[in-house]
Image (tube, rainbow, N blue to C red; front, side, top):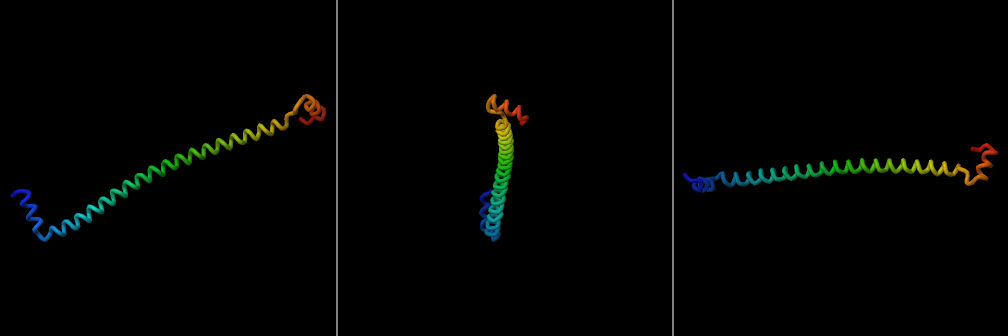
Length: 97
């Protein structure tokens, strides 16, 4: 018996409609699950990328805060400095240094 004869006999049987219907359902479910797995994988990698980017932004924000603190200290220190020799002499006389 050849394959085509077996296929023709199966098509003529009453189980062909049942097998094709449920085979299609199983195939559709498997394809949907495969799509969900692929979507979940992309979502997971995107979430990891977002976490890395947010960590980098936090570090950059911390660095900027540190720079602002140093600049504020420098401005405060500069404001306390005498502008010229006369101011320096006056501070030394008043002992405000």
